[in-house]
Image (tube, rainbow, N blue to C red; front, side, top):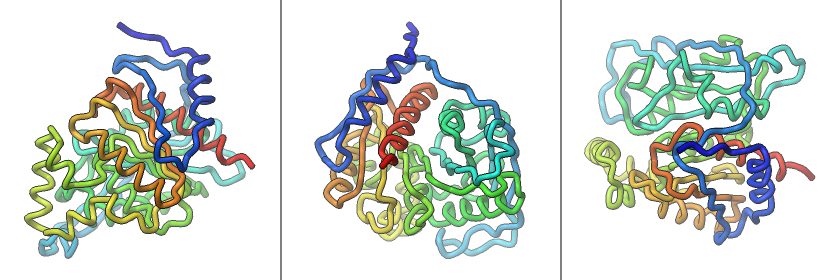
Length: 312
């Protein structure tokens, strides 16, 4: 059965979220949305472009493997709202980073509800397919340091292309294992004002003990065999909050068995006790592979909260 989420309902969610105290470890928002919910939100028209960072080298010290002679490439995908294309001021843009089980497709990326949420809010978006996903070649490394280098190369290639013009990075969105890459990318970057992290992996030990996902567990085993404890600690974001943006917004399904919500709550508490501005939205009855429209609704609520808290 499909439930229509009205504009009035979304407004109520906005108002409810805006009233929360971001630094309290006890604050959380329970949003009751079914996995088949539809949305009643603005759809943004857009211009799109896909390109590649070319002639990269695989392997290297971050993977524990020798560098190969085979050139590789990293795929980037960018979307700009049509009504923002020719404005004179710099357009804000959001970096988007995917999970293990999905990647960004050139023919659908800009029309997906996640990208649409950011564009409807007035942002351009830039998606990077990590090594081994989509049009990006190379070996997957579970959002390790090779992925970070690839993300930086993809961003540089997109900026050199000129499609994004003078757009300025303001925030990063990541989901699942993309949360690891999002956090490590954002460390120490003053231009990254906020992070939005969904269905996140914050503690690899907890994931290995509690996750139902064989994909995650196998990836963690591979990391341990190649990079030892150093690789596990690098990907366990909750172990080290150094350099992360001070504004972090989390969302998680209460029925997520791949990345159980308990670790998101622990991460939220850790951030709050360290003087971060943090909010965790939990969606009742929702698992890890949440419907894209649920993403859209949760992201729209979060973006409204970011705007509200930015006001003097």
